[in-house]
Length: 356
Image 1 (cartoon, rainbow, N blue to C red):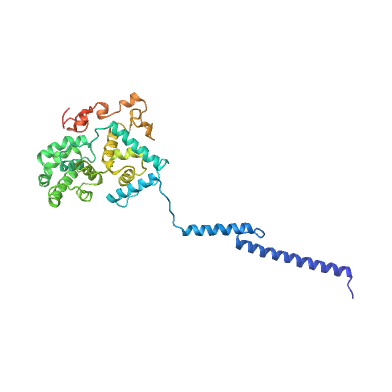
Image 2 (cartoon, helix red, strand yellow; image 1 turned 60 degrees about the vertical axis):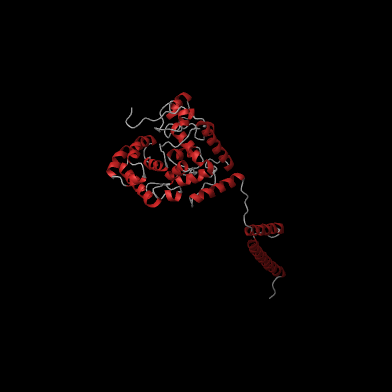
């Protein structure tokens, strides 16, 4: 039986349409696979070339070593860090100022603060009475957890009775404890100064060594004490990171470090090594007289325009002047026998133990 011609033609057309649709779908899937593999779309050869060019450039850059040129201030900091590293290996130095200012700006501001302080305190000096390296190292060990004034009032009796390392090494601990009682922690300090004296006699011929690596081996002597002795008894530069120094350099945003060794390294990188000892005196003098821990006298501070922490303390000039200490406030200093330059600048000697 023959089928009608019209129905046969329609059936063929429908089959043809289905084949065509299937072919287009297959072609679309093939194109999509190619597009995914090449990260581009068909019909966009320019985009494909751009992607290939970028990939080639990235590979070439990865093969080349980085050659960043240091700015002058960064180079200076790097050189200073090397110098500090010789005295204290394995220290880290902050690469960026905590305030966000540029390294060059930080170096300039830090050095300007030091210059200003040098004009304010031209007589800055170690505030421990001493006549020789032995007296200085003993006095510095005793200054832990007490004031330099109390140490200066105590050491005259100690050195009158035990003037040399040999004398102190052979001393009766109970007698030394009684002399050192006013300085606090007198038993531990007695053990340190007698032990220190014995090492000086047994290993250094009764002389205080002039090298950092030898000093820090002595009982009770750390880096801070060692740099006080090196800078003031031997003329060898060092940074003394005491509580005043730590407080001020953080207020000035020279560093955000809290570890004394890291502070020493970071601040040392801002200054020539030749300035380290006097820098320490300037900063410590300022911390004791004006930039106090609890009530900074901001309104009487000569470096207020350079200080990021201005306003933490009293800003009224009249009220701030009442907060000044030692010679800045018209009061006695910490030394019983201060340098003549201090006396010429209006400084007043401290009273002896028990006076007034």
